Image 1 (tube, rainbow, N blue to C red):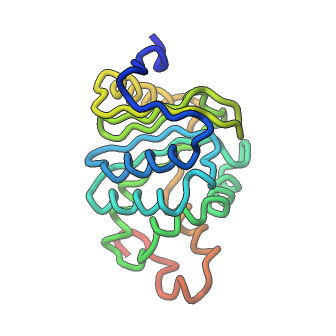
Image 2 (image 1 turned 135 degrees about the horizontal axis):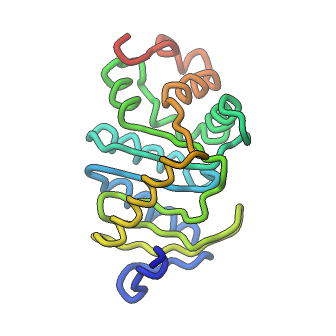
Length: 206
């Protein structure tokens, strides 16, 4: 049975494709409520959706010890380094609050250990966010096209299926993990000297 077939549309919250602002607010709320795990599968990690506000939410849950895993399509097909550079540049305003005050070694450690990014050489067909047992599930859509969303809280059976799907994705041969510190370094290069004063060369245990 597919993820879509598991949804009872009479129970969760359905958001039509025309309501992008409401969709983003639901995602922000979902992330803010994270207690143990967050797993996100996205296509292009669109900067118009993964905004500074969502970056703030990720920053806050990392402070609470939540483990955050995000999978997206490579920004530059077949080129890891260029994909990391493009990710940092295109999503700068998402990363800015996540990496803020990284000159504190303790903060560097929990961000680098708690935030994990995976790049896929193929665009994932099914996009979702899993926060503990809450699920944000998008309808299948093409790149750049609008999509509807189903949002369900405490959906244990669906959450288990999403978790298994995520684990299978990151174990596949076309997905690889990138170091969060590598993204941090690229984001730093985009900042002004004043913003990164004293913080540009920090790494865990430094």
